[in-house]
Image 1 (cartoon, rainbow, N blue to C red):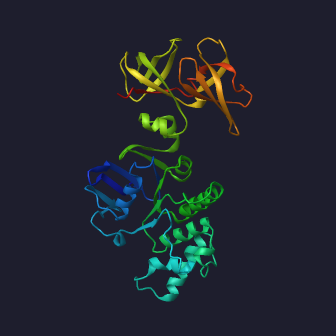
Image 2 (image 1 turned 120 degrees about the vertical axis):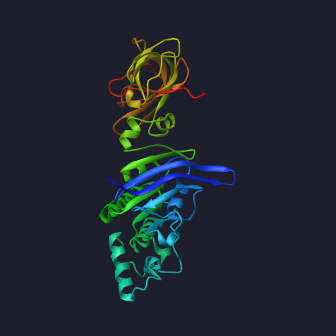
Image 3 (image 1 turned 45 degrees about the vertical axis):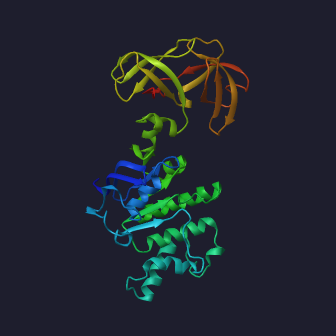
Length: 358
């Protein structure tokens, strides 16, 4: 599919602080892309550049083949739902939704029809006369969404749309939000720092780190094939084990882990790393297994903690060699305080290797 939204080489500074550096991203028509990253990574700034609330120091914003970098927000065809919704408490629900339609020369009957249509779309039919103060947090979020959709924008932007909701309400509202976006079919970018939210809502996820775009891909791609050490550590759960490359065959590497065991394991790197390269092996919990203490080809340690998680249990194992790893297995695999050996299930989930930073 061709790109409906293109961000081309965007740079942004505030004073002497570089917030975004050479960020390029393409979003297909009707696609949902989640911008994911820690606080301060530049997610909201990128959204504001697309909306027109900020101007880039360099680079272009293109929507539907037209450069909109120099256009004001009202002329970009973009609808935005802010983190705190920015609803008007003195206006009823209908008045809030109609606000974005003012100045368009529409007849009152047409405005009322459009407001009704948008409220039906977000599951709030008949709420036109309700006061904002009478609504729950999830209902306020849906009013904000209806207001953003009322002018029929070409692109929908969502800035942490569920952050003000408690966990149970957040999950229910997320399902409603995803369903509504799919029904409308609108091209959408959303900002979040919650991985579960990004994975659930996004067709693809763009990971931002320190103002740079580290990787864009489907959730499973980011988890199984991270492009950088930051993505590997930030996405999902992972343990880091230092070692040195001993042999190479294509992108498959053999490495000797640091520590008295001198254990050799296999792993996969993004590019060929010559023997002798110091690396970090990023290991997922399902890529490790618990074995009885003293089992050959294992790392010795003690179960420091265990956390039941439904289909499996996470075991935090303090290694004798130093450091800690997390293992995902069944609920009866080991008890807290038990001595164990940690084995590598490299065929199921091979470690990802990255050159040691510094």
